[in-house]
Image (cartoon, rainbow, N blue to C red):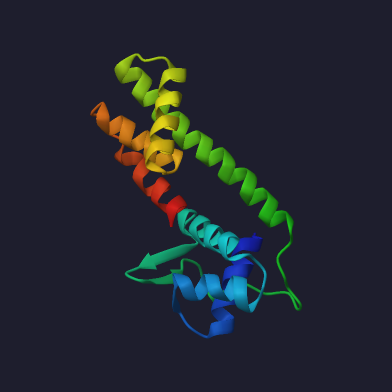
Length: 159
């Protein structure tokens, strides 16, 4: 079964005639040329596609992980608006999930109350003007807790 994400990506690569493109080239095509996404939505869409292994990062270039020729693009194709709503809700859940997982790890090691940990994360976030995920990592580091497993997920959110 072909998913809408695969059709969007196949469309981009067929349209360009290239096998590899830069991240900026992809997101600019999605947002500025095709006007399917805002620049922020385009970046999120591409990061999600990388996370789901639909796209492969190879140095500074990105290529498809699936066979482009097996995807049929409908005439007049444009993505449904449901795709954007679904992604936003999923990202909100992932954000909560990552911070909650870090909070649980800190709680297990320190035995601090979860609310105290949340308050400390919010304090660090506000003080250093950073997102909660990074603040949670810094707090974990303060308590010498290994949180490497969250780096890639948080990095993709930042990028």
